[in-house]
Each structure stands twice: as C-alpha cells, then as structure tokens.
Length: 521
Image 1: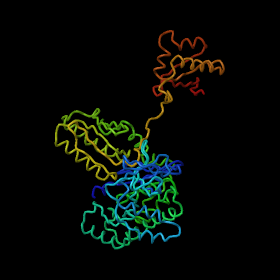
Image 2: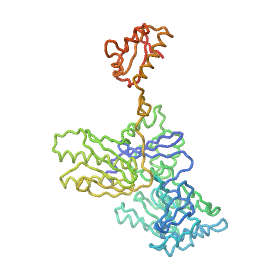
Image 3: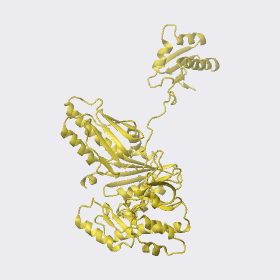
C-alpha cells in the first residue's frame, strides 16, 4: 500500500483525428500506452454481444460464435458458466410484451451446468446466446468469449444470474470483509451476485448502493434490444479505454490527467465527478503550441522504449524479440564497467534489467509466454533475490501472471494474461539517402547528376565561380589524384569550382553556392 502511494501517477491523453493515445506515467516515466481508434466499430474486452452459434467443435468441446466480426469468435464449454441455462432461458423467453424484470427475477438459476459436460448437449447451431469478450482478436484467432456475463464498476462487479458475494483478497481486514459482505447481501436484488473490489474498502452503504443501482441499470438497458430483435448485435460496450483506466487505477497517487481535446476533457471531468468527485480538479485541458506528447517528454520515451534494443543503464541493454509462440528477452551487460567482481556485476545488471523488463511487459502489453535470458550467476542467493525482486515488480501488474524461478541456464519463464495483441511501434525512420530501399545510386550516376547541375549553372545561369558542398567520402572521390574529376570539370566548363567536405551530409547529398555564398536552387 505504501509503495503504491509513493508512486505518483499521471495520465496524458493525445486526441487526434484518427485515434486517442493514452499514456500512463509513474514518476514521470512511461509505463503503459493504450490506443483507441476512431474507426467506427471496435472490439474491446468487456463488450457484451448477442451472438449466433455458427459451428460446434465436439473434439475441442467448444463452438464458434458469430458476433459480427470478420473472424468468428470462440467459446469453450468451461466458459459457458454454471448459470448458462438461466441466461439462455431469459434470451428465449424475453419479448416486447412481457415484464422483463419479473421474468428475470423468477427464472431459476438451478440446476447449474455440469462441470464436465459436452458442448453439443448445451448449444445448437443457429442458437442465439449472450457472450462477453475476454480476449480481443490476436493474429489469426478471433475473439475469445465467455457466457458468464459481468459488468465492472469502480467498487463492484455485477454478476447477473448469480447468488454469490465475493470479496477481493487484497482487502486484508476480516472485519471489513464481513461488513461489505453483509451490506451487499442486504441490498442485492434476486438473481444478482457481486464481486466487491479492493476500491470498495472503507466505502459507506450509500456509495455502494448507488453504484449497484447504476450497474443494474446498465444491464437492464440491454433487455429491450434482446426483446425486439433476436439477431447478432452489440448489447453493452465498455467505457472508453480512458475511463476504464481511470476506473481501475484512480486513487490518491494520481496527480494529474492532461488532455488536448476539449470534448474528451469534459467527458473525463464528468466521469470522474461521478466516481471520485474530489479528484475532478486534477483534470487539465492542455492548450500549448507544442504537441502534448512532446511537452511531457513522452515521444522521446516511446522512441527509446519500443525498439528491438532497449538501453538500461551504464551501457547495459535488452534485446527484445517476438515470435508467434512467445516473447524472448536477452539481457546484455554491454560496455558496463568490469571493475567489480564478475558475479556482483552480473547481479547488478540483472536487477536493473528486471526493473526495465517489468516496465516493458506493461508498456508493450506483452502476453503469453515470455522467456528472459539473464546474465549467468553462480550464487543461489543472487538467483533467489532476483526472482523475488521480479515478483515484487509485477505485484501491481493488472494482468494475471505467473513467474517461475531461474533455471540452471539463467532463464526465467513468465506467463502473462494475453487479452489483446501486444503493442508494436516502429521506432525506425526511413533513411533519407536510400529512401528505405537499402540501395543508393552508384558514384558514376551521381557524377553525371552533379556534372549536369554544373553545366546548367555555368552555361544557362552564367555563374563562373561555384562552391559544391558534399559528404567527405564523395569529396575525396572527386578530388583524388592530380588529374581528378574536379580539375576535368573546371577545364571543360571554364569555371572555378571549390569542393567543401561537410560531415553532416549523407553520402548522396550535394548543395551548390555562388561566389556570394548564397545557396543555388
């Protein structure tokens, strides 16, 4: 808890015509980057759909479900949930003429679905079922779905067709757990369950009652659409990524939320006023002439953090590779001083590397299997300290993860929840010399080009005294030997030509100047 308070968080939001980019900073250091596109329809974790079963896969005990995406989504039997029959009956019986609230409350949530059962005994092709996205489409795979619907708020997660009250394990006080359990059990309507989140600790009954009513209202807002049309449709969408991040992370350590768009600024202020009114003043509208990410030094951090090679400190660096199966991170000591003993030096570099790796996992939202090749250490104590350090660094990571101790080869295996594709940003820029082709014109062709320019200035513009600035390598080529190319040009065109080597020029760059030093076009 103290660690969390010591970490100052800032949210910087860049809104342009095509997308919203959200940067989360901890102590002014970039730790998360999210993008939300303005491309019309989007597929986000938490969105609820009425989907159509397209194909049963008995061998996998699963089914493909059409939710309107190009790729068919996937639901496994185990993700249907114990109370799937209640959801299924509700969808089938709901119509515009019935009392939806009465129907919802009288549906029995027993008997539960068998834990070991077959998908073909529950679903049929063409059946309409309510589903929720738990993983966005990744690579060739469609969205991963669950039929256990949940609607998240700041303090509570609402569970329709459930009868349980669960409390976050992060609430340590047993007395507080009992208070929250008793409170929710006394106000929960029939056929609703709830998960009490860590943020609910210490909250009074009025706050929780109000949030519960809001979440139920959101769920009930889906019902008219189901009643009117039993077709594929989006029933409920999550908040924008901006408000989702605020909902999950907003606490006393948040110091500012800066945004460069007035509409989004007003939306955020309105949202924060409902979940944490005392925090409304931290939202600020950025009006500077400089791009907002440049002003907060985020552009530079993105460029230095998303490359294949990521510097750590004192010459050490990471090499990050991504394959279809996993992410691989190699730790290198680089040019780091070898004054210390080799074992201590390896331990120090590995500790620095662990700090950056924990940041990179969140920053790139890396999921699946991550293999880290640390520098070899002989000391068992050092290996154990490194393992514990990595556990502490990832303790506040919102994604579910698992870390294994170092193997005898110095490898650490990490699995991290994958709910959306890892963020990849191309930090390389096109070479101004070859224009990204990897090839440049031969010196013979360049000779001809410059000679044509010389001929034009002397014969067409009648300029007899010229200065040519070029890269030092090309200058050496033009002036090598007594009967060099420069002398031949001066004799041929009866002019005075001075060639000046300029180290800042790329190999094919050339600029012409007259006798007054004015640049010629």
